[in-house]
Length: 484
Image 1 (spheres, rainbow, N blue to C red):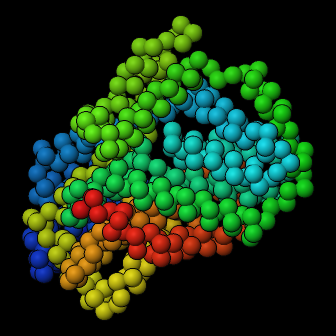
Image 2 (tube, helix red, strand yellow):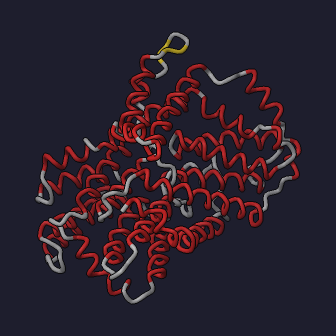
Image 3 (cartoon, rainbow, N blue to C red):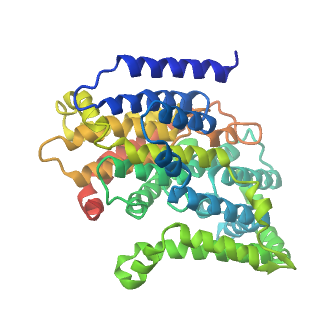
């Protein structure tokens, strides 16, 4: 029996036990029992074998046992607006990567004259480059690209992979490349699906644009914390940095400018981002309202179509068939399933929030609210570093949000801020090999050695839990009041 078959059998047994032994009590309905009989084994499968084919099996079994209706289910999984948005985003990102535009931008940023002889300024620009490139593509692409550039720079100045300079900047790549995926909202499968989880728990007005306020603040605090750890704890050896020839990189960029294809693709991506930003700027009045009415799928779908028509050097900027072959279909399937479960999980027909409230309320009601926030964030950080980010967030929010909302006089804006912070906390996943798929290209021969890194990573995660609980959540009323 294969590993996948063993875990599938275990999941089926878990589902059968829940289906036949769990009673519809404390607000949980019979249909809610059937949903949990599918959803909990699905979480187990996501943790043990991955999210793609397990998602397909999960949805199908849910339809079979009557947890939800067939037609609406499959339409909800494959017809989600976020799935329709993510597919063309992958297409545009693949063109940017293939054209060399992203690599050109990175080299331009790290070769500015003011970094000459100033290693910490180089580190700051290296950090800024990761954030900017992360806007346009996915973490694994970001990490592969930056390790390639870091290796080249270290070879030219005389550093090896065993030197602390390489290790420090490798940590920055792994930490920041992954964390950006939980903070930057544009075309992010994880964020798009997790926002839906929060709306399903009772915050119907919470949107991706609402989350942007939390995500950007969190990312800024993360970058500051990360740079302080590198500067004062890792303390990379910078003696060899005086050999860094930024002038040679500038000369290379001048001799080999960004290709026409890359410029057009970059222009298309900037148009997409500009449309999203305008739609979030309510002070622009009718302009913002119009952009919002077009849906988040509009700009990226339009740009994809245009890139297939516009030519560079006699060829279309985007070869649709070639670009489509690079789409991460497992991510699409996983996201569609998450989105569907998130949209129904809080439904009154199931009674799951009431059931979870009954289970967790005794704990939450007997400790200070602030302590409850810290406990939940700490739990989320621990789970996400050994399992799927999405699983960690769903488990944490489904357990704590209903119980928190049931507390008399609770500030709902702070609860929503806590929920939004949990998205970012669960995206901060890099302490172990299994924290997320991105770590497979970080802790490897082409990346950095895992040995010696956990202490830095764990402390950074703990710092972010503290900053969320002590700084971001207390200001929740002003940050999230408009999303209630």
